Length: 282
Length: 281
Ligand SMILES: Nc1ncnc2c1ncn2[C@@H]1O[C@H](COP(=O)(O)OP(=O)(O)OP(=O)(O)O)[C@@H](O)[C@H]1O
Ligand SMILES: [Mg+2]
Image (tube, rainbow over the protein chains, first blue to last red):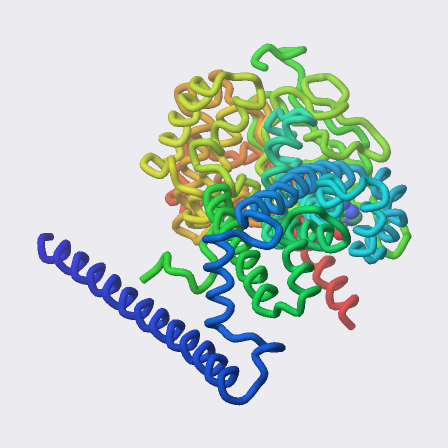
């Protein structure tokens, strides 16, 4: 008995050690890769290619430091970030709530989805980026036109997934719930919504990216604040380092949001069997 | 639920019921036709028939999930319109909620029926114990074996204390040993001191394609014809209760009734098989 326990402990310790060594190697190779790429770029820009067009890592880094310490041409960098983030978040929240609600309603109602199908197809075929210009005319240069662009991008991404998720609910589960005594509302709340959740969460990942794109593109088409404006300004002054620096800030924001969404997903989808290849087994 | 409209009337009555489906090719497919079946309160009826003949369809008529195309379905003497009170139904395929733990899955029925969370959990805990899943309360379905999931489904159905229990090949996916255990357990729960409510127990319609299982469990075995199904014959099972699933199948009485029913069932299986090869050719 004691021996068995010992064995078990050893096996666990071994598995841990193997896992740790593996992730150490993976990270080391990653860092090496980044250093190699940046180093080559820096060298190339110093000796062969024109840094005016291609910029170089040290210049981008200096630009970032400059932005964060002494501010940008448009004012404090934090103001720009906060402004863009606010647009993206409002658009994201409104778009995903609207997409989820409408998607589930249409997904559960054969009649409504039949009626709306051609309109939704048509609306989805519109190149949505162009709407950004329209929204500037409609809502002006302020925040609402960017929120509207972010909203539209997020809405469609989430809507189609929620629709599909609500439509593909296992009939068996619905019937079982009805037999167990569920009302129509209870079926919606306890069967349809949870079944659609994995579909919806999957779409939220790309949707936040869309929200940021929407906000930035909106700012591009005309704005008085925000990261998009900053990038637009950098473009106007042939400041390639500024464009890269803006890009990096946006990427970091998107990665942070991705990380938060993954946490949320883990929390909500605890019930799901771990995906193949993950480490539930040793 | 325990008060029935007519205490002495039959629990289930199918009168000349026919069910047609629109088939994918646009035609009409008859799944069951002119079905007459009566199940007394507290009676355990096993239904056997060749595959695809319409057994599941019959259960869906009784459960109220599907209305009959022609004919009448009565439960507790009342025509079925929607899902009747007191019906429990274990589906042929798994229907436990993958996003709920064992305990919450079993508590689902009481929660739908307006029982408070605490109370529902208590009831559920009790039933989880009874089906032998004590200790697995906080597991999710994907962490259970197929047999354990069936037990969850059984507890989920029984916790509502149905007066009519419909079971659609509940144990067919299980290995032989587990199946024997589950059969014993089902008989114990059905007839036991209190489990299903009254001394009389629930009226059970148990669909299976396994004749041995039908005879081990049932008071009566109903043989259905090849599809579209109708009742071909009904055999009373003259085996004493309580029965032990493992031992009873070795007795001479068992073999005798087995031979008799199999004689009837074989013809239908034969017909279905010939059709199958006919379609394949
Ligand atoms: N919803 C439906 N729509 C169309 N046809 C259906 C539907 N449900 C069942 N059928 C048809 O009715 C017939 C009987 O089906 P049913 O599921 O009742 O058979 P079964 O006796 O339960 O078979 P098995 O033993 O394989 O479970 C089949 O031919 C099937 O194709
Ligand atoms: Mg069936």
